[in-house]
Length: 390
Image (tube, rainbow, N blue to C red; front, side):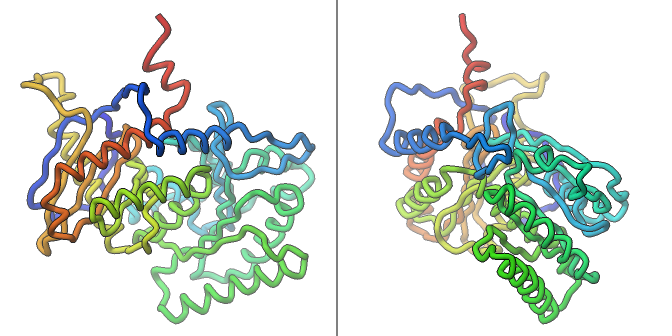
């Protein structure tokens, strides 16, 4: 079964009908390739072959690293700001209510995430003085893809903002290519007015400090987040997307697919974390995103119950190679899911009645997109494992 085991955290009662088959990874012939495939491959090749400067303080640009040099995400912030809760909910499927029982982090927690792109998540203790001379900045920031700073919006955040400013100035001096992502967290308990005021105040304080230091265009981005809704998944989606070198090409391909098939909105999801790594260029609709994310939970649960991987079940006829399903909701909206590979799936929202009647054409277009996508994200060591030398 291609879908990894994922603990379901939210239930859904909207499914009226769906079709599912045993999913697994396809091994496709590369004898003929489309223009889209060649364009994606050329862009990926140019990106991965980019040389890194040999300066003593390596200036990093967000990129997909080789197998032995996984990009890192650093979770930083003061104690009890919510760093470990975010990591547990997003990457370990912990129900948000259970994070209340997490203990404070006392040492660096390193998690390796194995997906379409292998990366590491480091959870830094809030009390760790990593800017002291006794710490080697190269070991901390040397292979960093993004720095995620978590601010507790329900607490006095002035100390957190001051420490963040010192960290940004250090990063900008030695590692200006690192993206700094600021999660203004725990906003679920704030009123809409106070939430907006806190956001504006934090942004203003950080921006003024950077401008005074001469860093007017520092790569710093701000998000309002909470583990009790989908805002933290949306924020992490934006963070991960910046590590994908061919993101714009993927977005253009998904937009073209959506226009040709009559999709209202399309997301390319990482199945394990339910982070979307790309979508079409239409504005993100949070309601549609939540439906698509919940639908993945439904399909994963069903695939665990009814897949043919069970040792006591026998195949009765030819089986489909990938998970493919659709469901029509009470308002006639159709959700269409198609597995791209064992890591990624494409989920689309269809409200056009004419598009729903052309299911065969939609499937064919999605398969064409799948071929190009799998060639882009296929990795040399996986190809060697799938096709060992004879």
